[in-house]
Length: 536
Image (cartoon, rainbow, N blue to C red; front, side, top):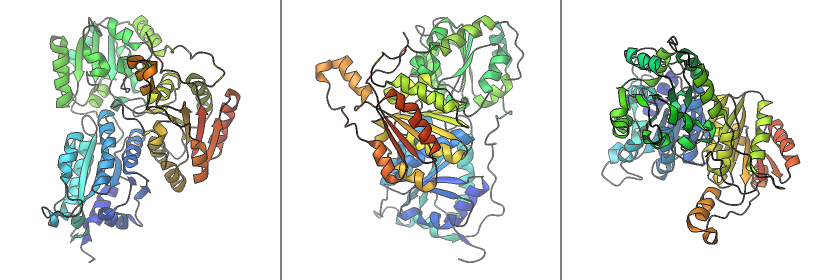
């Protein structure tokens, strides 16, 4: 390598570092080994995982915790195929991630080269942008552009294909490397529309609701909802769950939607999670929707029809920032208190049992988490995960998101711990969910990323089992059973902490011992089979 020339892989690493990237979640493979070599001795840390799907989930959690773009890297062929699910999750959770994938050489296009495939055709429908490098000089500008696209407007995933020969060819570096636009963590304050019409509508409403998309969650923008609530004298909350109207995190909020006369959506699609905005869910509400996304705008027009008073093509974060400066023009304290009470409502407790149940496990986790430094709570899907969403609260929380994808919770824990080494990370999942990425406990041990995983083990895929019972009858339940495997022993064999809990009195001591161990920990709890919490 000459003094004035560097490999494409070196330009890629330099561009990432220039943009502030310090962590990449990766799984090695033939075509991306030049990037591993280029990263050696630099500020870029590669967290080497055990499955390509895990890289994207870790990047998703890292991005939500930091406000930065989470970066993942996989190899070509099946490596990219394994990572696609994380792109779906990040799209629906409105999370900026950059997925880089090794690719067959440009010089071999059309020849049947090893793992040659149309990567862009595969990823473009799942991303905000997908590009393939065809000249190593493109690396710096392309990286800067994709990182900006990932954060701009409604955040989401982007993809960069890394052909093998483009990583190896030497080319001069630009001077200087391009800057990446858009601040990573601050709410943007420019390019906001004229808000007079919106603030006038808010001032005139008697029972307004402001609904935030996942991009404006408490974890990403602490205190934003409270600040908006005070500024607008209106209830403000974020909808992150695929259950939407039946979201256990939001209690009885669908009752508030039925009463509302105005709904302002800041980056939240008017989709199935909002009951499509139908009149039987929001019978009297007029709507103002803020989104720069063409697809979400089309959904709003189609579902709301003439009930859509205004569609703003603007960054919801910029509009939210502008609205924090508003002055309340109405006294709606009673309405705000009423909705706050509805959202704070707790589901009925599970039935008394000699066995542990999901509710009692969640209460124990809540007690331990609130006593722990810098708690981060992660709730995966499934019946047990829904109980965790209903009953556990922490300053920072991650959920499996609107896509309904399950299995990422274990990976979220690693990404969260990489984002904040001081955090006490608790992740809740069922015994079905843990099977997706159980080997990542080895990654956590090797990378020194400790957390506490709590498995609600009822020996079955309980959500599907309950569907069979409901739709086909209890005599037709089959194929959803699990073995009651000792996941705690598997984790202990890898070098982590494992505990098997079968009695209520042993649960809290096991959780505290797991946290105190300083190791990746698995607390495997035998629980009674009960359905997820529901409100009438």
